[in-house]
Image (cartoon, rainbow over all chains, first blue to last red):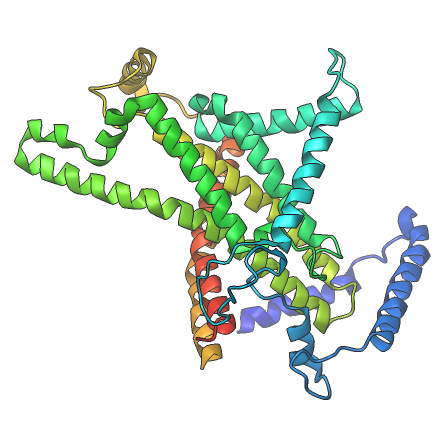
Length: 348
Length: 71
């Protein structure tokens, strides 16, 4: 306790002891920022007066915190834009329902896909040896992603960098479009990755990709041998049973992968939107800007994580499990080279 | 009742918080000890933080389900 007291005293006393700060050269910008902040507050008050909150549940008055928050939250299930099966009603209390419809998240995702695709095509069309501005940008992005992916997943990941980069860009803009104001506030548009259906779809795509790649590289027998290692019985009954058990656990983990992939993305983006909505309703409108900046960064990291995990799962799937069979000669040589001096190598 | 359940589910965020804290401290230590490998360590730290954070997000999802899906 006493040490805390001393510390705070020191902090409190510090400005007195320090010489008065000189006026900084950037001081002249300050009035402009003050005017901006004042404008935002005035706009906030006008909006608050001109567009009063209406209770969704039909009550007469809208009490400040609860009803306001209720209005700014979005339900986890998306709003259907085009109902493909209007005759079958949806049970609102059910956790999992099947109802074919084109939801607002799907529509937004198509818009994002169109934007990203046209942007990428326009930027790389007519590629030159000396790149223009657009080509430069996309080359920088691709090189960064390529270096990052290869640095994390190893040189075996090089053929899969295009999948990784495409997934990253799509998910990045899927996440970011939720921060653009009209998206998420009107029924037609909503951030695609804040809908669990979309993220499960993406996770299933990556699930199919890494299993297909694993079978393509190891063959069906070799790939199944990862999960049902019957050949281990050569080393005795005990080793075989243990290997079979480990293989079963690995098989179960394969099905956990898409679940965690989809839930991580959905939870982060949806949780972020809920937090942003609550902050926006409870405070003056320029305070959530800090949270908005945080969300901008977190969304980018989530996109990176989804795509990097996809890449790593592919690399894990294509590498063979055991040394005796299906080993590429180069990898074996590397292993032999690396095995002897590994304890002696200097850290670099 | 649902709200109490949601609050209890949100307690699940404690664990990943501690985990990410340990991970961040350790990776900062590692970078300080070996600054040349900073890029590599940072990449691994981000991925591992995502793994730890995924568990916290599962807790949040359970809480949201408890609030929104009233059986």
